[in-house]
Structures are given as structure tokens and as C-alpha cells.
Image (cartoon, rainbow, N blue to C red; front, side):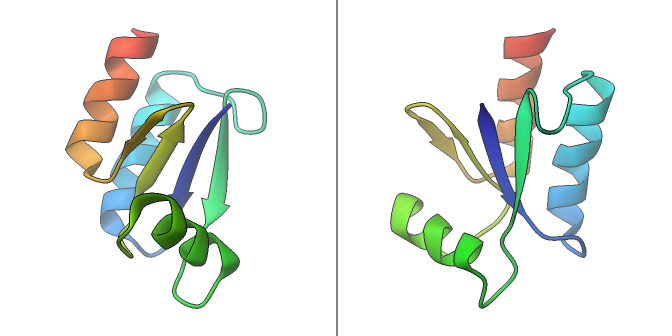
Length: 80
């Protein structure tokens, strides 16, 4: 399952979430949204996995990426 590390007030995270919705990805089935605001275990995991404290951060198996435009392009290529 794809994991997207994000938090509610992040505009770049919102763009990615909207893309997942338009692609018909089902939370809990196709994608897991992980709370990653500052001070959360999710943010610590972002740093541990990717090396920097930035969201959105997508993990899909061996694929890891930070930039919202890159994440959206990746999701569109995988699910369109």
C-alpha cells in the first residue's frame, strides 16, 4: 500500500490528496495517509526514511519522493 505522509494545513499535501481522490484511490485500501505534522511519529519517520523533514512524502515500496508535482506525476503514471 502507498503511504503518503502529510498534514491537514499543508497546501502541497492537499494538492496530492486531491490528485489521489481524482484518481479514485481509496484510503485504507490503495493509500494510507500518515499524519506527519511537526512533533509527530509520522514526521520522525519521514526524516528516518528520507533524510529531511519535508512533506508531502510518498513511500511506495522502494519508491520514495518528496515534491508534490513529482508525487502527482508518479501517481498518474501508475493509476491512469
